[in-house]
Image (cartoon, rainbow, N blue to C red; front, side, top):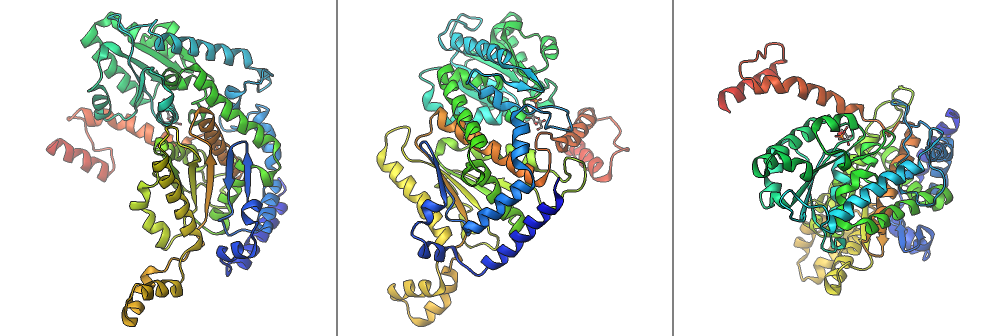
Length: 546
Ligand code: F6P
């Protein structure tokens, strides 16, 4: 690793940031009528506009120099070559192979996986078709109208987000529902309106040991047995996992068990059979469109020069804000109601991947890593937390996601949605000076004393950075592109920080402790003496008041 090159690149970025500190991005727009053309990249129908960040050509050059010093191109090549880039688990991270429809070899640690991948996908598609067409029915002979995916984290968030995003593409197929939380309310509320005799359950778990999923699966099984009898289980359950031995123990009919591989990380698994609920709800053709969108971005990420490479630019702009300017959060605001779960999905993708404090070699990281990711659809967010984004003391970079045409023709609503999104990004960029605020109040007929009193409250600093991703319409291919863009953005940042984005040891401790505490919580006579004072006190309180 060329440490001196990294240090030089970082030092140059710091010096450059100091030079830019006094400027306002407004001036950059005033000085350069071609700023939009200079700082945007398009890729058949997809546009990434990053002109509203206070950056110059030099900023980009310095960021690209940092990426090269961190050997991003070599790291990317190792990722796509199926090398064991997940070094703490000794695995590749070859989720791109799941969406590679090119016909060429898909190498994972030197083994061509194409046949296996295609066979498993075909099996999933055949099952999805049979459910959609009513050839496979419930125990009472009724076609399935509803599919309930039981899973959590990567076995839930991606497919749940996508099923909602692509709901208009169902063409009368079964509705998809998602149960994740071990809180029994999740299962109860999801099942309340459903007819069990027309409901298919999919137990989705890479490890098939996750406490929440196993608990919900057992409860769902008990419900089916109570309503339809033991024999109905084989007709009403399917499973997706890499641990086929454990699935067999649960008693799911082998023809309804769909596998995938340990080189597919949980938060990268929606492209695999973990997408079964999605494949059933939108059908195999649309699912293939989704895969195609992901593959489009894999090609772009590998081929485009770094300064025209959308995921590389997204990642590098994030590094600029996080490391050079010290910005701790990142907002993702889809102006697309059907992307309501996209921020939640991204939280796992970004924060579980890059929420790390040690490098690949186990040394403390030198710089801040993943930001806190949050978001809500626009326009709703405008009436909730945007006040802080406009006038709060912290600057939070924002990604706006927006379609140029609606999926359902409702031109008036969409025009308002579009205008709102652009109005926000313009306001964040431009802001309003004290003089402009005073002028507005003057026009409003206020007297000078009132103008002096109110004007400071109406000042917006502006210079608050945002990117806008425009796609034509939210169809399967566009969604596949969006998801893959963010996957690779996260990878780019992991390379800059020299961390492994494909493990998640941080989740383990909580899991271990939950398994240790569960029997103590359940058995009211179990001693709490060995626990810390707070944990013991809280359990005792529950025993007395619960
Ligand atoms: O939340 C931790 C985690 O390990 C995620 O990485 C994973 O997506 C989730 O649990 C679910 O795991 P599984 O699919 O094995 O049930």
